Structure formats: C-alpha cells, structure tokens
Length: 453
Ligand SMILES: *Cc1c(COP(=O)(O)O)cnc(C)c1O
Image (cartoon, rainbow, N blue to C red; front, side):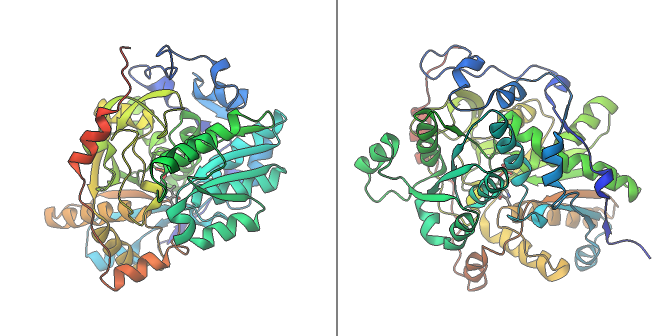
C-alpha cells in the first residue's frame, strides 16, 4: 500500500536552520538608517532586538545550530507531516504527484511558532522580560503569545483594529496564553495617536500596528520588539520546514519539479523553498519555485524593487524590497496574513535575480481551491494558504493538459478553523474580489523615502 503521509521521528528532526545568504550569487543590499540613509550597525538595532538575533540577521554561516531549548519546544508538534494529496490528485484527474507539508499541526495552527519560539528564547537568554509585537488576523500574535507563555515573558500585541472586531477568537486564543491585546491604531502610542488624529475611524493596518509595537519596545528598557515575517532571521528559523521536507521526500523517493508557497511577508514560503533554492544553486536541480500572492496586495508582481520602510509611520530601518509603498493599505481580504505592503528582502532579491517566479490571485478563486482541497483531503486551509493551493491546482491541471507527470510540493501554512466566517461568506457568494488600485499605489509610491545608496 502506498503511504498517505511521510513522518519523521523526533530523533530525525533537523538540528540546524539553513541560512541562504552565503549561497546567494550577490550579497543582499545593506539595511539603511531611516534618518541618515547610511548602512546601520548592530548598535542601531539593539533597542529593538536581542544581540543573538541581530547577529543572525547578517550571519554568513550556512547552517546555524538550533538551541536545545528550542528543539525541546519544537518537539511539541514537530516534525510536521508531509502528505501525498492522493485524493486531490484523483479529483483533478492529474498525472501530477502533489505533496504538501502541513504546518497547521502546531498549537497556534500555523508555521509562525517556528520563529516565535526561537525569538522568545533568545530574548529570554538576554534578560528581556516583555515583548511587543503587531498582528493582523491574529496568527502571529497567537504564536508569540504561545511562545512567551512557554518561556515566561510578557506579551503585548497590537492587533489591527478591523481584525480585532472581526476575528474575536484569535484574540481569545492570545488571551488564553496570557497576552495583552490592544486594537491598533490605539491611544497608547504617539504613532497610534498620529493616525487617529488624521482618521479617527481608521481600520488599522499591519504597517500601523508595527509602528506602535516598535515605539512601545523602543521606549521601554524591559521590552524588545518581535517581527513575525520579512526579516532574514525569521526566514531562517522557518527553514526547518524545507529541511524536514527534503528528508521526507527521500522517504517517498521523490523530488519536486515545482515548489509552491503563499507569500505575505515571505516567511512560510522561504521556510519551505530556501533549502530547495540551495539545491538549485549548489546541485543544479532545475526546480521551479513559485511564490503566490493576493491580487489585492501584489508586492512582487506589481510593486517596485526599492528602499522603503517596513511600517506605515516610517520608524523602521529602510530595506530594499518589492513594495507597494509603506502608506498603501490593502483591501480587507480574508487572508489577513497576506495584507502587507512589502516583501521580505531575501525573497525580493531572489525574484529580482530570476531564481523564483511569482503569481497573484483574487480571493474567490482561492477559496474555490480551498474548498476543493478540503472536500478531497479533509483539512480546511487558512485563507492565506489557499493562495498556494490555487496555484498548485492550476499547475496540476496544466500537467493534465500537457499529459505529463510532474511532482509538486507546497506548504499548507496553517488551518482555517478561525476563518470559518470567511468560508461562510464564500459559500454564500458574498465574497468580493478586490482589484489592485493603481491610483492608490501611485499615491503611496510617491511617499517612498529618497535614498541615493
Ligand atoms: C502569517 C501567515 C502567512 C503569511 O506570512 P508569511 O510570512 O508570508 O508566511 C501565511 N499563512 C499563514 C497560515 C499565516 O499565518
């Protein structure tokens, strides 16, 4: 009998993260100081991050050992299963073999604790007692709340106001793990007050919530900031996904022709894909690597590759990335985790170098794919993950058209149990497809910081 899932034992779990930087054909562009426009040093970041993470951000080590304390927590749900989607293949009548890595088995239900646990551990080691962060739909906030609880730190989460009221159960989850959750924009920070003065009814955005959390951390000695995506160290922590997948595919005697992931800030995609990019760069494997984004926030396919702020108010360092402009606020699609104006600098660089491909979809075709997946495989995907599934189904149908076998691997980054209201709206035919508004993006791009570097 052919297996449905490929499992690793705890002893077989990888003990290193993969850092792609030393394998890149060109070095990543430097991070710049928001005021001076000059490259920043570790001291500039010290008010926000512990030293260990600042070092990982610029590390040239190809493999970084995962601390024992982090491995011990990972074992609560890792290694995660690799599935062969046999029932989906049959439903699609495709000759393609479809594999997926399922990250929804973690306690918060997504890939995000892979980095939350690591980040909180390094903060604890350096004596930090409290962490401030932002969250959109609540997945990152719940991952950080979970990790803070395990290591005994306080968690303060600025949650995008629209989601705070639309997704009350993610907030409940954070509160069960002991976090304190504030709707953003709030009156608790200068950044929040500045936004509210301009627009008292602001629904908030990830960029605004980042401004609030950064200000909170910078203004308190006992507090550091934590980001759930985008940064190099975050992407590196996620590579345990791809390292496990490489071992599991060996058990299946398979190697992917196409690797697919959805992208918001780029972390789950990078986590699965970077080890396969390594094999492409170092071993000459011809794998296609595909990043899938929402048409409402198409930073890779429609954005500009330039220096921009990570937040809305303009407090973070400047990073070179694909961006729609830091003041662009994406339409309220249900994939809250994909509503971000920028893209991870490392993912942006790979796209610029032609090492990865990108594609954008509106939300109705993504929910259609998610429902088809749930009816075949059982698991109800997160709306974010549904973007990857749409692309996978399209690839599998194209393989059927061509009458050619191929092997597809994708990341099922989380489950959709907290997103059933979005499924309700889809099934009732009430889901709106948002067009990318070129005028609003032109406005936002006009506010790009002027950088000569
Ligand atoms: C946050 C989130 C994403 C998007 O973030 P990335 O950093 O791009 O991975 C995707 N899927 C799920 C389930 C998420 O929670």
